[in-house]
Amino acid sequence: DAGVTQTPRHEVAEKGQTIILKCEPVSGHNDLFWYRQTKIQGLELLSYFRSKSLMEDGGAFKDRFKAEMLNSSFSTLKIQPTEPKDSAVYLCASSLGDNTLYFGEGSRLIVV
Amino acid sequence: GEQVEQLPSILRVQERSSASINCTYENSASNYFPWYKQEPGENPKLIIDIRSNMERKQIQGLIVLLDKKAKRFSLHITDTQPADSAMYFCAAPMNTGGLSGKLTFGEGTQVTVIS
Image 1 (cartoon, each protein chain N blue to C red):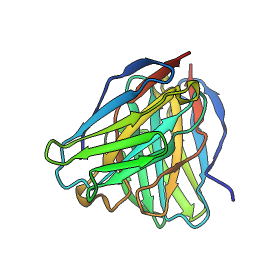
Image 2: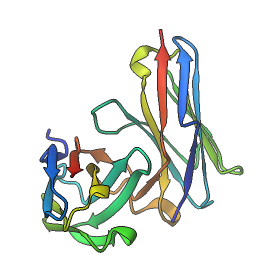
Image 3: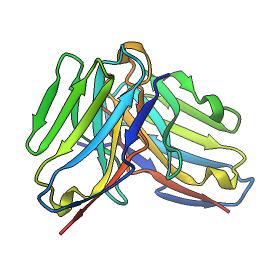
């Protein structure tokens, strides 16, 4: 049974570029989350979808971060334009809606 | 939203001793408290959780205690082994009741078990 799949695993971008991170949730999961993980801030919620509907979109992350879920098995997180402070691990997680999150392996982004 | 404070941020223990991590939360309506373990280069994985209708839960060498009055919950790793070395995160639901599945995470505790 496939877990959460994220691509790419590693990405190096120049400041100002647009990057798109991808996530496939566990089959049958209704909830999908994008988190950003850094040593200083820990795990921060970026976006939350329930049954493909965007329930929460970022607060402080709104201006350059856009998450989409075009179908129940695929989500993207677009960062445009990237800045060096966006360097982090971006974790996608899915859930049946019972509070148990299954995380993907993450996409490590470095912006230079 | 919920705020979760986690201490300590770093914990070094001798093999076979116990390790304890404490978390506090703000929202008295929060009803679900999971703990995630993240090994280097890996994704966080759920290891144990407790709901607000319980005060204590144990899975093998992991014990979780919940004190709703004090809005505090803790993880105790008994008989620690080198394989327990990892980052541990506590979490609580972001909104009232916790039905959405959104979690606020503590800042993490880096546990190192010394042989």
